[in-house]
Structures are given as structure tokens and as C-alpha cells.
Image 1: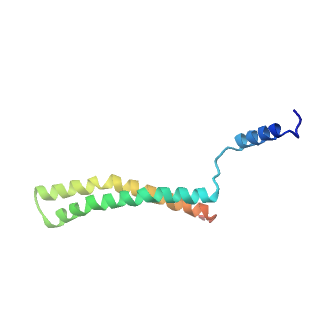
Image 2: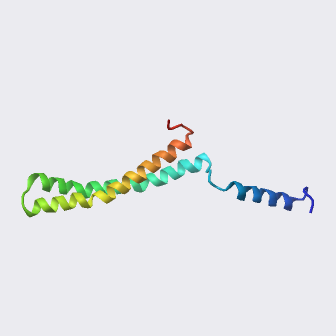
Length: 104
């Protein structure tokens, strides 16, 4: 095969793609990835607020067992809130990077 044949050109392109890797995404793909991360982030935040709000009300207005249940509800709202913050911050970084803006 000579270098002018189409099969050889394809092999060179495939080798170049393998050497460079697929670490850089095109900008529309980064924007889309940011939106995909943001949607579940908002749902997790909504879930955390729905769990924590009754807990806060129980903590403020009650005593005894109901007060303890309020504390448990607020603690149970922590993991969905942390997941939401992680997804929303990842979404923000992906969308910021898609616009080629520097962080510094």
C-alpha cells in the first residue's frame, strides 16, 4: 500500500487519534455534559429540601421525641444535599470550560 491509498490514510488518522486520546471534548459536548449534570443536581437539591424542611420545623417548634426526629431528618437530608452540590458544581465547571473562560 502506498501512502496515497485511502486505507492508509484512515490507518494514519486512527493511529493519530489513539495517540492523542479522547480527553478533549468539543465545546458543544462540554455544554451538553454540563446540562446533563445539572438536571439531577436540582432534583437532589429538591429532595434534600423536602427532607430537611419538616426536620427544621420539628427542631424549632417541638421538644422530646419529635425534636429528635427533626434532627434525624436534617441529618438524612445531608447526603442528597452533598450529591446535589457536587453535581451542580460539576455542571458549572463544565459549562464554564465550554465557554473558554479562565478560572484564575
